[in-house]
Image (cartoon, rainbow, N blue to C red; front, side, top):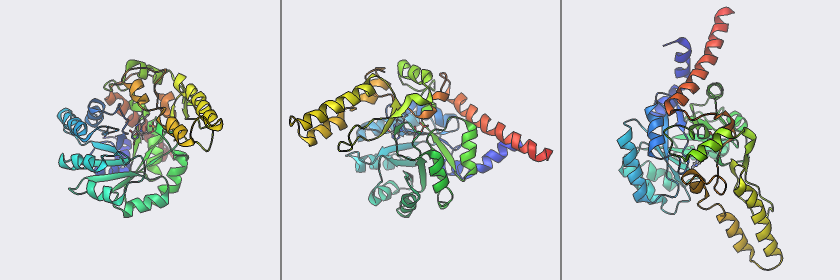
Length: 343
Ligand SMILES: Cc1cc2nc3c(=O)[nH]c(=O)nc-3n(C[C@H](O)[C@H](O)[C@H](O)COP(=O)(O)O)c2cc1C
């Protein structure tokens, strides 16, 4: 092994040990996208795949975990959304099926959920929006943290990955921290490792993996898009909040603005109750991700994507994507090592 690769392995050793993977690169769970095939492909390629439970029932989740285990002997994780009404049952399924790593996403998990997930030795990863919450999650039992910046695809917070990394990595040392959001190349992975991250999580970059079952039209939208096409959902009135979601601009996102104007107009004219309007706004996107990912309806579905979408230029085997990321990090380190020798 070359000196540069050895240095990379040293930099992400803690993440590799924690995940049980060759490369501390997590494939971020993406609802409908991160199912058995992509998850197994990422783990088989030396990364760490994470199944997205999304809105699955406990029975469906159990079947998906077993199907993934049939495709890979390597470790993989399961991402559960904390507001899922059957969260305790979903945790039980993961524990019973000896899932090694459980990621609790979509809001801050309760202490009881973390404890239940750890009942039989699974490691729990939680998303930390700030250093204060990160420390709290560690006190509650989180074994590792993920920090995800606003550049990411899907549901997002307001702060950039680079700022979160500077704020959180130097102060949280007790547990491994994985950085997500806007990562498209190996040099960026290296820079976060050098800031103190134990590994990274990428979502958008894996959508066009050959093994990913997303509809060809969904993949084409990613291949065509630039960073500036992946924008947060628009909220037109602070009295009617919209959960920010980063997605590619399309007919549905343009229509969402018109839809909000219409329902809020109805509230103002007394035709509609504010509560009903809020519910209508919240449910506008229901089923929309599935429509785009599975059915390929890229006009009327939701094209959740991060700003790194500009770096997705072709469909590629998963192993090639992971190989490229590692090669870019190694090449950057080689230049550094060469300079050290020359000086
Ligand atoms: C299409 C799509 C669906 C996603 N669904 C989920 C999800 O169900 N649960 C979750 O915790 N994160 C979800 N994410 C976020 C990813 O797990 C990951 O953290 C994020 O994509 C990383 O940022 P990047 O897209 O810039 O690589 C989703 C992202 C995308 C692009």
